[in-house]
Image (tube, rainbow, N blue to C red; front, side, top):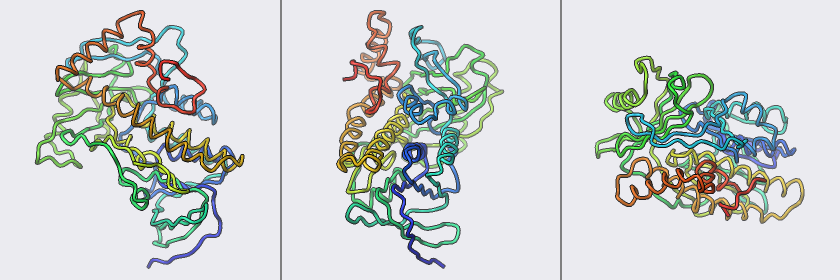
Length: 417
């Protein structure tokens, strides 16, 4: 039987959801002494195949809160660049970082990253993560938010109050819908994206940690997802009208495995498959990220987790959103800064998605799978410029696109201004 009660212990910030962006936002605030409560419907961290790469602009933000060493220790450094290949695995072009470039990427599966951040949160003593607790509704007052949470363990419902409520509760966000905020953009209706976790000693065959396979039908991305022989493939298959978007039938699973076995070198009968998950892919952005003292983030704001996976810009954008939001709320709550700072977050981060993340990731996707004449021409021009030893700025943009997405970095490149 459901009961309702009221809590008198108001936290400064409440965050709904428990993905990496939520946890990183909580860590940023908790490290600044701000009290944070996180509520998540699931019983623990989501373990499905998702993001795996964390780029220099994000690593800079991890460093600011003292989390970089733990992330690097849990994952695997990659500073060897990447390959573009054809569907038979032959190299089309390899991007090598400059010898004096100190930047690197960390390869680490999203669930493992979440665990690292969760442990760092617990050390602060300023934040609590409540699993099996579901957001129900909210009501805004004068510079505060009342909210109701259901405890899934006993069915009880509690009303509490916070100064700011951050909604990062997924692409179907209850909070976004309660605010009446709409999404703008599009869905890749004709494509079912599939992520595959597998074990294979691919590095022994000369493959870099990041590989982009170019083909209209067999396109895919194959990247390391941590230490040892842990790898991830992200690919897509064209759907017909009878396709079920939320399941993988045996024929589709076989097709994906055959694609990987054909592409990879060596004895592919030894591939160990660990997980395979389908995704509907969107590139959509909320019409606004802020209403009063309610702030949208991650999938609730822009569906970058469900953004096309080419280039790894989805979670990158989300984590850089968290960095901006964390700075804004810290300045308001700890330093008495203007309460209009969330509006700056709204304008800056919406602009980043619409003007950078969306077009860059779309161009990356078309570079892999489109066979239209105009895209073939753009692909040829892309590789021509990468081959040009004098076109350093273009190589920089190709190798470090994440710095185009940050609004809090201390590292700036004029090519992105």
